[in-house]
Length: 170
Ligand code: ADP
Image (cartoon, rainbow, N blue to C red; front, side):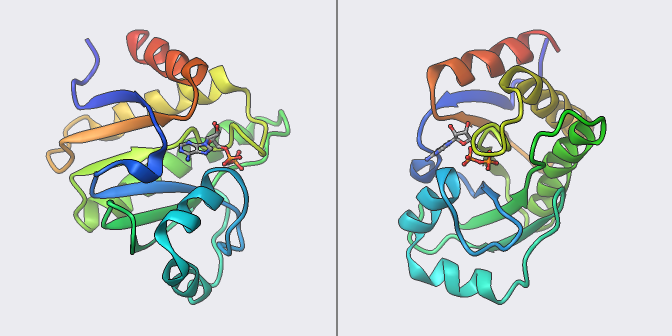
């Protein structure tokens, strides 16, 4: 049985009333397309102003800002790997989830939502990314008593199905 705190939602992450949402950012942290663009549009210009002060972010790492006009109090910006097919892609994607959760735990954020990091412009295979996302979060939550809910927020139904399947396979 998978951890009941792990759930899949088919939604726009900018609408979720969780403590923290995760942004699949690029290493400049200065905004981009996809979920990054949607988060910046919804949060407003103060988010970009705070991001400018962060000095970028390395792939696999994570940095936190406030959520400004978002329902979420915080945004955790992480930079996923661009898919190359090399063995280190998987480990770097897992690091995004682990490091985002570590930052969230310290805040503390009790509820957090992740987009499907690296599965858009960064071209990570969606089924492989879902399996890594779900396994990494499940492992990080074992023995954890801070988080009450972790949402895999999927923008399309196919992605939601892949995450639900990965959860069922745990
Ligand atoms: P990356 O560069 O890490 O691949 P993208 O933003 O291009 O990031 O895509 C990551 C995932 O986020 C994709 O699965 C895409 O469908 C999804 N996505 C795009 N917009 C949103 C949104 N508003 N809410 C949740 N997920 C989104």
